[in-house]
Length: 257
Image 1: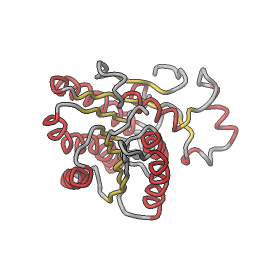
Image 2: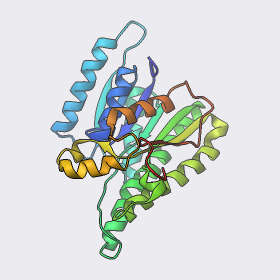
Image 3: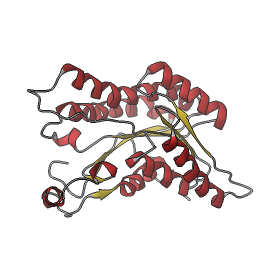
Image 4: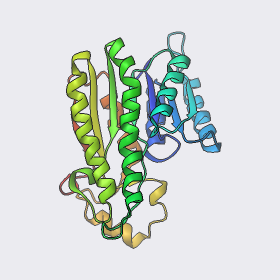
């Protein structure tokens, strides 16, 4: 197992790509601390899924566990409290996956200041807040891996998504800067940039529109959340000790990615 005896924090893990990352990490042997804005049925269901995976993997030498936490990771004080509680419960953190994010699409000519700021505050702000919260611990222990979830939209831009594209582009710049600052302490920082990924959010897309989108992808299909999770697993694992500051598109060859 690639992540055996590792302890990971995954933000935004109650659905979509974050959920797939949490499940994949658990199957690879990691203990998983994840969060959502409130402790609700979705969070409890994810805990139960993770426990089912962990129970099948436990041995005398490995005892993975999981727990969900109700915190707003885009709020600085809340992120600090979240990491403090995880450290109290798990003892350490080896991996941080910053996945939490939102969209609020609109053409720039109609986009409000609130739409722009909210997307930037959640998408970029959560990455900053969580990185600041976990960095002192990783620095002290002298190792760690941070994987930030970007987007090919942050590389190529997209119609009606200037706010989202700006937030994801900023994540790339932030990650590359952190990679340089943290490298001396063996803390790696990388970005995964998904393209069109099939999740709950795309379930209601009409077939005609889905076909149009897929026709623009050289591999002629959307990606899966688990394909993104597999890339995150690689970057979080000890298989790539010399990879940092990378941006890995998971997009089936989309133009400009």
